[in-house]
Length: 76
Image 1 (cartoon, rainbow, N blue to C red):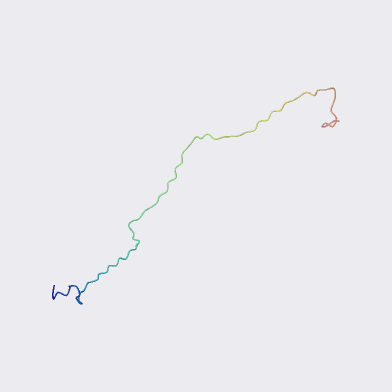
Image 2 (cartoon, rainbow, N blue to C red):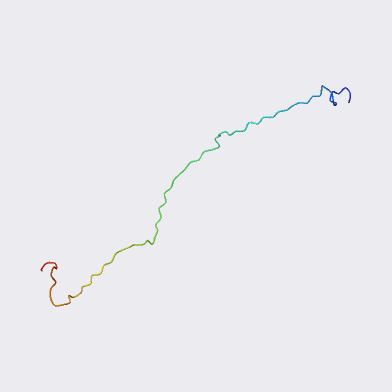
């Protein structure tokens, strides 16, 4: 390869260096519009819910023994 300038030991051997650069990013672009509409829908429901109540019972008991108790209400 005489005279080509690309042989071994040749001082004129050259190589072209190529460099690539990539810039990556994001850009906001309007692609359309949206419209939001709200509708209120009322439904009738029958629901079972727990309900608590307190019940009281009054039990009358006769006085046993022969007489009135001292220190009771009213008379004494």
